[in-house]
Image (cartoon, rainbow, N blue to C red; front, side, top):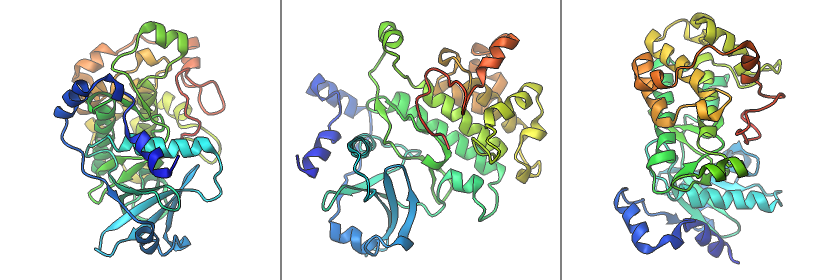
Length: 347
């Protein structure tokens, strides 16, 4: 099968057999997708100076991302399979990303500009000079993110996830939400990226399918979002240099209400107290071990905007857990994961 045929097959949704009328009904409810541009290899090679190392901006598990400067003055990001990659599963992930991201269209998801199928497989995105949320939070270059920007980023990621779970043409679970997979636009509007592990979801699960086959639902993304909120609040990495994980460190502080100790010291206590409380409350709900006790992303948005006054806060409030239950709640990174967490690396 040619690269073009492989890409064409992944650009078709898994629900294409459901009938033309059903697909057209979905399309009518969502604004049209922007047309994708088919780049020539000559164009992207020229833009990246033949993929010169100086243009390399990121290296992932199976791909490399290069900055590219087009003749029209626009700057792009070119993502390609790593040259030494021979894993067919990684190629499948690469193609899956193309198939899924080609169907999403939201201010808080990365925009696919086009692709190239000559001399390999390449995805072309808009380039964001602000880099990723991981570099903004943990990088040694540049000033620390101020609180209004952090709150804006948290809301934007939540809106993007809510769109993927409930509002896009076909429901999607990302399965790899982490700071390095969130791009920051020039105005620091967050863009969820890297859909290589994403999965299509049917309109609804049956209880039999969920419990008998161990299907992972969107609550996996909710847990990862809770970890991401803790990063935004504390400025800590998911696992620090001493191998201490953020969840085990933060939970006693969240339970005791010790906000000053929890907040990133680089903020110098310059944060909106109500917004901080809302983010902490939301994170505490999202990281519950049992997925059935985590809120949906629609409810997460309520919590982020209205906190304890929201209907979601009342609905998801739990009685104080027994000590032995608490011991099982935060086992992460080297310990037992919540049963629905399947991503391998949240760093």
